[in-house]
Figure 1 (tube, rainbow, N blue to C red):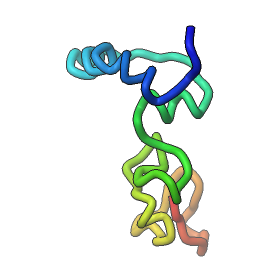
Figure 2: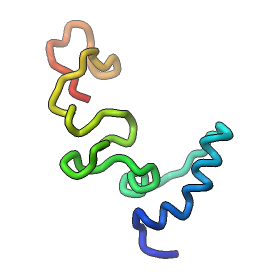
Figure 3: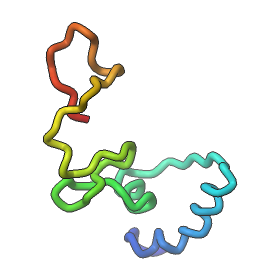
Figure 4: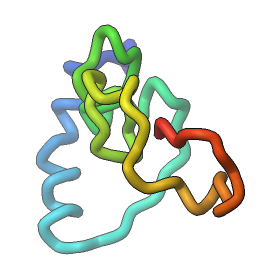
Length: 84
């Protein structure tokens, strides 16, 4: 056991790459900080170029509304803009 840091997650990179190349689906429970560090993406928009661990949005584009509304949260009669 050691303190959680970005460098310690690098120790597991070979294992993560193996799962990725063999198309194995692996699930684990972590807090959000561990998810960001393990995936190498996510975090504060002013600090990280890829602030979301779920999608490919870049921090430069967070202020621009999406061309397509998110179907999960917006209906056709909603006049709000979808930003993420």
